[in-house]
Structure formats: C-alpha cells, structure tokens
Length: 510
RNA sequence: CGGGGAGUAGCUCAGCCCGGUAGAGCACACGCUUUGGGAGCGUGGGGCCGCAGGUUCGAAUCCUGUCUCCCCGACCA
Image (cartoon, rainbow, N blue to C red; front, side, top):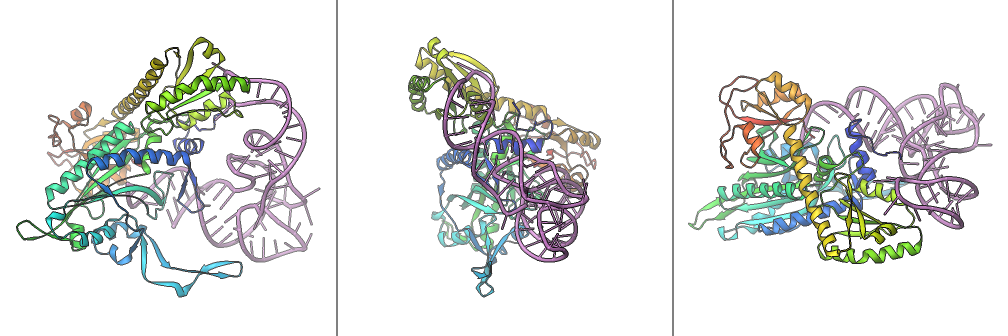
C-alpha cells in the first residue's frame, strides 16, 4: 500500500498539499493564485458558515450584501487604508472585449470613466452606504455582516492560507460611542475564540497587534493566533476597532440625544477560508485530513464488508435503523454502499477525507451483534456491541464528543509544549529556530520589532490579552488573576534592555 | 519581484542531452474471478507533449518569448 501523502517529517509543505489533494478539498485554477474549492472543501466552509452565522445572529447581527466593485476614488478617502491596500488591488479598466482573428482583445473604446476596484475589503463601500443610513443616535448601532469573496493581488500564494481571491465574512458595525465600539470589537474576538476552540478544536491566543501589524485604517487590531503542527503561527481571525476613521473619511455623523453632531464609531471583523488551512495544520496526520466532529460534513460512515449483493442488501437493511437513529440524534452519517470499491480502499479514502468515525460491519459482526468502530483521530479500533441499538447509538454520539474534546486537548498541549519563555536575545534566536511561540519582553518600539523580524524572521503575533489563556500562559506572562486586563510581569527588553516593559508573543508565521 | 525546480493521458512520471510513427504505472470502461486495510487477469478508450513564435524536409526534443505550479526570500487574512 503506497502512501500517496508525503510524511510531515519529510516535507511539511508538500504534506500540506498532498492532504488537500487526497481529501479532494481544492485544486489550483488556471489563474495564478486562485483556487477551485471542491465539494469536500466547500462543505467544510459551509459547516463553518452555519455555526458562525448562528453565533453572529445570536449576538444581534444581520446579514447584508454589498457590491464587488468599488469606485477607485473610495479607496483614497482613508489615507492609511489606501496605503495598506493600494499595492494589491485588482482594477477593472474596460468593459468590453472585441474579436480579433483567432482570439479576443480588450476594446480600447470601452475604457471606463472611473476605474473600478475589486474589493480587497469592504469598509469603504459600506461606510459610503452608512452615511445615508445614519442620521440620529436612534439609528445606531448598525450590526451587519456579509458573506463575500474578496481579492488581494498577493505575490505568493498557498492553497487556503493565501489565495488571490478568498471567501470570508466581514462584519461592519457602527456605534454611537467609543466604548460601545470597543465592546463590540472584543465581543466578536471572543466569538472567534469560542468558534476556533469549541468548533474547530483549535486553541488560540487572543491579543492586540502591534502598530506595524495593524489593519490599515484601524486604531487597534485584535486577533486570534493559532499554532500549527510545524511550529509556525497562523493569524486565524481579526477584529478591528476602527475608531472614527471611516466615519470621518466618509462623513458619517449622527445627532446625539442632546442635539450635538458626532462622528460614528466603527468596528470590522473577519475570518476567511484560511481557517480551512488552519484546521488541516492543527489536526491532520500522514494518513490525511483529520476533522473535528463539530465541523466534519460527514461525521460517521458505515462501510459494509460483503461478498455478494445479497450480503450487501442484508447489511444495509441491518444498518438502516442505525442511520435513521443517528440522523434523529443530529449526526451526519452515511452508509457507503458503493460496490465497485473494496473495503480497504474505502478505509483509506475516508481516512484521507477526515471522517471522524468509521464503522465496519460484515456478516461476522452481524451474527455476533457487534460492529468495528474506528476513530480517525487516534486510528484505533474497537468492537462495540450492537444488540441494544439505543446504547450503541448513544455510545457513538458520546464518542463524537470525546473525539472533539480530545482533539482540542491534544492541540492545546502541543501549543503549550511548543511555547517557550526567554529573557535574552540569544535565547530568543535559539528558541525561534525550534518553532512555536516565544514569549519575550519587548520595548514597544517599531525599530526593535523590525530588527527582530529582519534578524530572525519572527514577528510579534500579538500582545496577549491574558485572562483566559490558561495557567501556563498566565504563568509565563506573569499575569495576576484571570481578568481580561491581567497585569503582566515587567522586565527589561531582551534586545535593548529598556527596563520595565511587558512580554509579548513572538513566532514565525504563515 | 529576486534565487532554485517543474509543466508530456484524469494522476505520477519516462522520453529531450544526440530532432525521425508519443510511452509506462495508476486511474477510467467492459468481462470474469474477487471483497475484514488502497484486488487479480484479460480487452479497450483516452494526448494540438502548458501556450505563442522561430530554426528545420521534419520539433515533445534545438532557440526566443510568455503563462502557470512547487520550494526559498521581500508583502499579506
């Protein structure tokens, strides 16, 4: 049995691509840097969407849709915003093609009066619309999310992690006060953290970005940072406090209760199909994709072992009540009745695609009132009695929960084990080579940050918020108590020796 | 955009140096035998050799340009 997946140890980057191919998640399209998301990959995105969309609605948001095209002039209204995105915009300049002998070319007569930008993000077009929607404090807050695609003309791309076009959701909210907007920013950060940990089983560190890593146009960018198996960090989601920057750029004001005129406060927040890359690099192994049950499009698959069509029919009839029972328990399951493939092939295929539980059942098991239940995460198998169907099916549901919890627990211990705390720059350089998070004291200046990045390729992933990071991180950071503010221990900067500065989280990242 | 590697059947690749009828394995279709970890045998279908020019009697092969992918850097969700 030849393994079609390069081992993680041999070549992690190749392993990542092999897993995507074998799980049939996505493939390259004819256009550089853009990908085709295949049904298996899209099903994961839909699963993420379902859960997140519910969480957004529960926190009072509603969905809307804004256009793909943005007038070029909009991009220039917020100075930092344009500076951040100008270098990676797709620009529509013409509206027509014309036939030439053997092909087509752009019709020069169709040149647009004002060029259109394919949205790299939607702050500008949304805040232009908000100007018309907001007059009074009674119109606030506006809590809107949109599911959309955006385009950023990236130089170097990787499937899911960085593609020129990607799918995401972007929340854009408008508030009457600074405090309310900051609360919203933090609330959505918490939603992301909950989603990452509870649904994706991917532990994350919450924190604030440094000025140089901040979203173009934000006052503060908060993020969730995850640690991949190969020791590189992944920015998994961001939540921005935009201050009044966009309200000022687009002249969005409201009348206060007292009759004054104020600019509106804003937030924006998003996660993207990059999360699929995160899920791959958090749980998967050399056999292929491993999916947490909460996210898996298919949670349980039943593989019949049969010698004849009669056998297959008998087994299918035997399993039918299980499928119904599992579905009524809210489990996504399927009976794999394909007769053109041998069981071994199906086992390998379902493993490559990350189905959390596989049940194998043949005549032998039917007669003995058992079924072979295999866990994808541990690759372990056990024989479970099936004579009491209720007990059996409840046991499977419980096993899904166990797998979900185990995946989070092992990802968390991996993250903790890969985290080091250092005091000197020498220790830092060595720790960074090992991969993982490195906690060190930094003097807060962009110069030092840049020097570290140039010399070690490590970036400051965030200034951790503290609180719920877990005892290990709180200990490292010297955090007292478990409040969000948490007071970190102060010490000299590892590079410049500036005294009494706070610790931050470093890593090499995707 | 700089450095390195690569585009030939759906996939992985050989053939290229040294120009002369386009190949293998896997996959696919059909038949028989199989079915508890990626089945065996037989038969068959499938290719503007990434694309565009050029050299040549003749180009997958030589030359030029171009596009795309992978790896390493600078930019980023």
